[in-house]
Length: 337
Image (cartoon, rainbow, N blue to C red; front, side):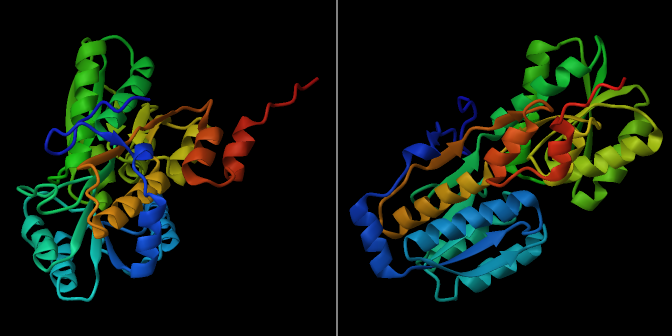
């Protein structure tokens, strides 16, 4: 699938599979024994676990040690504090996914100000520029993910229906891109549909936000949640009403994959490739540490997942056999006499 979105400064994407290390650079990196810290919004989600696995494996392949992994638990104040601390620690580089664009900027700037390389996942804090304040942003095509979410939801919503968008109420480039793309696709391809918006500032609020959206819009006929964890809260809220409202989301987490395979409310998923994104982030980190400036925005395409290809997609995304629940859903039922 083509990459349709642009980077945080309007950059055109360089696909991740076009960014690599020469043999000479790989040998040079192994001789340097770099140290790297990773700062994540969370380490608890399926996406985060695979992203981290890709980063760690790739850095290890080139002789770099991941000396610290920080789980910010979606707490921007904690992220600011940890980045300020890392600026004083003996690490060569920091890989971070900024929680928000504005408040996190000064703390992220502290990393390059201390002479360390900064690599960013998904989002560039306000005012920060590639090659000056950070090495590169490595991301999935979040605009494309929003388009996939809309395209998969539209066939399940009748003419003139109302769709909800469950949005992340934090200044976060990746989820904003998904929402913008979703809205643009619906406007272009299903102008008969109307959109309403609910939002949450913390994933624990997603279920309540969905319940409020349903109460205010009893005729809601579909929902797009900007990633899988809040989508599970949305599914719980819808299920409690007894309604059958189709949902699409982003990220092929285990819970939403099982719901999709089992014929639940999830009708489609725009999957990221977090392990591959982690690999790209690891390569970009090594390039930056060797003073080989990688492209300012490195991106990967999304993957469209439905009940018909969820098993194969799971194996592609997670690099593991699909769970039993998904496999059972694919087995043909025997005819009864």
